[in-house]
Image 1 (tube, rainbow over the protein chains, first blue to last red):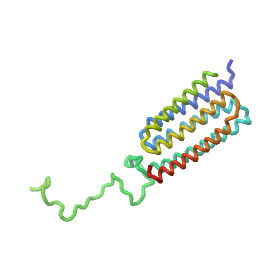
Image 2 (tube, rainbow over the protein chains, first blue to last red):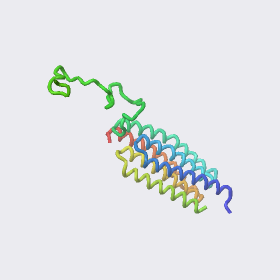
Image 3 (cartoon, chains in turn purple, red):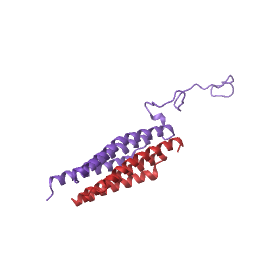
Image 4 (tube, rainbow over the protein chains, first blue to last red):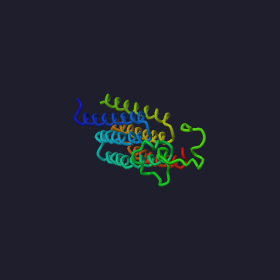
Length: 134
Length: 86
């Protein structure tokens, strides 16, 4: 006979493991480093929290306090890691910056391939064979 | 109850396998750093399931230490990858 506590623990453990699995699927399937940060931080943290809650129901309350600490550590450190990795990804060539709607890390003098600048071809431009030459 | 533990450990193992795919494939060092961090989180989850299976809290100190270690190492590796343009 399964007790209520067993059923509740099972629900929490299964929910946590499913969330971790979906996060891993997202980690494989997402196209870009910043998108993978979403999949690496949010479902994994939630899944770990669910598994820790399920575990805390099975041990004594005195031993459940460090599990709360582990969940707290995970929730505090996951956004920090995501932010640091996001900065590092933006710094290099990991993402194509033309796809960004708003780029807050753009430096004042930085140029993008999508910037339209008038090309100065010098005083001899327009002479010679061209599509519009007579 | 044992069936539930088997299913949960199987799901975590499948997640770890997918994350290893990203670890092998990921173009660039940052994707691999993120993959290793997720692997450590899955490790913590698996150890927590093992604690729930046996009901003895001998490995709880391991959870805290490994979680903190994952944070420090991921941050250091990400900053190193940024400075060295990996």
